[in-house]
Image (cartoon, rainbow, N blue to C red; front, side, top):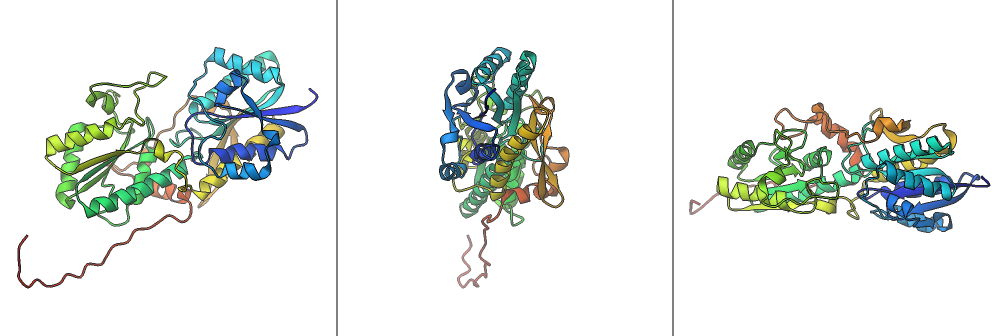
Length: 406
């Protein structure tokens, strides 16, 4: 080939820092003289098969940096989950445009797409380097200490629950906040970072790594409410019973499903409403409120971890370096070093593709409704600098004169 072209795309749910990885690829690629064109695919793999490509070589460095600091997927994304035939169509387009390096920023499904496209290129004897760049707020990619996008979403969740706790303390009652996470509870667990004082919420945290019992849930809520006169609860959208059935589907009269046939958990608000109804009807507590964080936690502007920004940029840069200097395809992984630093490795695609990481047992409290100190140590450095803090008045009671009883 007379020149070397690369193509980058973004897949799956957007994050607050996914554009840092995109710009990391573009800016690092510009350092290699043999790369003459940098293409981007609009709306992920769908854009590739539709040949909806743009020439990112023509972007100015200034505009790229502005885009890097902007949440959500600048190229657009897709929920398409390619099978072998779909990936063969992807490869045909890459081959037709003489692409030699393919970078796909995404989560579990995206890593599997990269794996299959890599196999297609090998079968055809075509010189295509395929690199998966990690991204997901669920933090569920195996082989990674953590995944870009998760720290910023965790920062949002921690701050949101800190605010909800203050609200709940002012007007006591029960508050239920439902957080994203179908199989992995990392993001819901981040709510624990909202606690400062012993009586702060969230008082109860429910994760998909543990079986959910509605009867035990109601007993837990009653016990906390009796102790504190209020209760703040963090619930993962993926909580399920012993059979694996989603609680949302068991309590709901109508079940919505996504494009892959999974019970629709995000953005419906159903689980929060259903749990609140159970608390009201079974425990007789009048002030019960629920929120579904839904898509707010993914790309919330102004609530971004600077650590997450830096590492998201670096995984994009390292992807290009691995592609240009390495001899194999793979998935970039973040590895923690020392008290807190990171290094990057290129894992075999088979080691990551289609696999799901869940919270390790040592991160979940024995009660099943809280996290351990090990989890707090794990998450604290990822949240970044400038985390807001909350303070209380030091109540000095005035002696009663009339002695009126409440």
